[in-house]
Image (cartoon, rainbow, N blue to C red; front, side, top):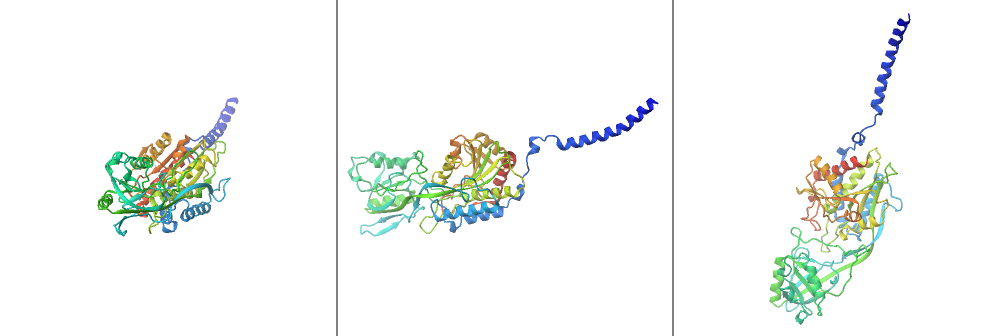
Length: 476
């Protein structure tokens, strides 16, 4: 009797044990800890609206924004445009600033009217006016050059550096034509010539250097300021000193012939340095892990180099409406996801990049979030139609390698460089992981030819996917 009862007991309970075992296994399948790879949230990278991204580039590079130079109406309109976009897609407004704007004081270099360099005959009539940015580039960024005023004087051809000396009183009141062999092989030759002239007891009215440093067929517009100690930029409204310009070979030959023929040269400049209030535009997606205080900055510079005052402006489609539009699209896509990142993601459109990285420098010195655990991906000139590698640039070896590996996975041709002069640099300078993604297509940047035709939508979409892939792997 006892054996039969035990048999029935085990038979009945074996069924119960089997059921419990199956349930346990089912529960185990749903509650077992996932691997880090399995825990990675998946972003819908196929939902990139590249058509709208291209439309934003077209708009920012249009005549309405007039080249977006810091300190101009076009730049202010750009700030408003990005600010309204961040508000529309629902980015948080960071604590401590109003309307997504981080405002700061910046000195800006403005071209008030078209420069003029022209040959005059013995009667004072203009016989040849040279083309601004096609024949020559005006140097207004060097300390002690004249940036406001004009001069008319005889020309003296200088073929040797030693010819610039205090013994030669004939230099007084003249315009010096510095031949190419004087500065051959010296990348800072123009600056060195200026310093030599400034040491003279005589007053030299102008310096024309035969230096053809055009990008492509046209001289670029340069608005960089000196960076001095703790200041964001310093400029000099000089009405004394020589007027200075760089001339390409053919135009310089015309000048030397005119000098030998006894003609004079007329030079006129009308630049100014002004103190303006500039704005970085900042929007945020807060992270869920408040204790770690880890932040990821996705950045691009919104400014460009403005109007040439000769009926043309510099659209800056590739440099850098492309990067600005890309971070705007990335922000839109992340906000459209229902997933909250663990890291706080900060989107910054920096101002003043073209005038010595002023906006990013200001942010590093006045960060709205702790910098200690910050990583920065900066987009500058992305999506060039030229088939060139993507440069992953900056002094952050680990971040560079991570992005390079993702680029390789996505089939993006890329290379790593330590030396990129963009908005990652102020972060690198304080030891942070910061990298710039850039297509180094410099053929048309800082000229009137940098239009939407220079941007390829597929290559731009690939860069957006690269950034999203990094965000997916590290921020969620």
